[in-house]
Image (cartoon, rainbow, N blue to C red; front, side, top):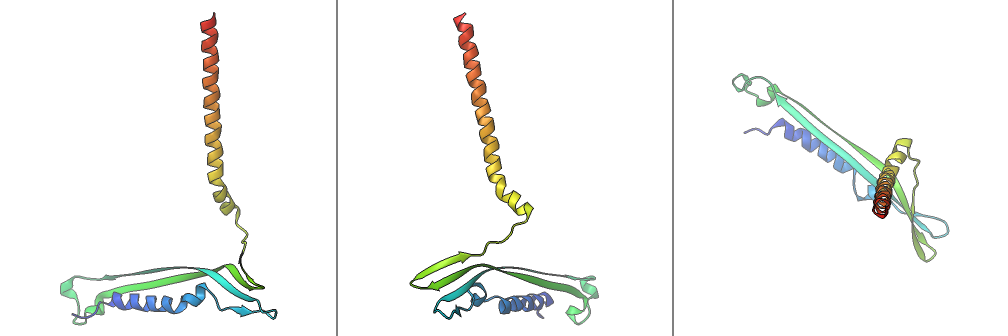
Length: 144
């Protein structure tokens, strides 16, 4: 049985990604400063991959070349984002993170857990206060 064409598409895309991303992409090549300090860039690598295909027509209509009625494609992408620098020198090692400017949406997403916690605390305090008021009313009624 002949090799299916989708296999070739997937192998080509995966080998291209493998060429782009290696360990030196994540932990970069060290840079030597004049004072003897060594600076090593650290990056975050994200990638995605997809492949698909379809055979057209019925099996009985396939040409002698089984690939004749096949259509397919594949694709991939990679993002390399610097996240920190490791600085080695003067008897110490420091990790210096790169601070990035977040969009307002990112900042909002970061603040949501704290906001939810404050809302829950507000309702708990409100419920506690209502229970205390009920107790005071009940004690007042009992005293009369």
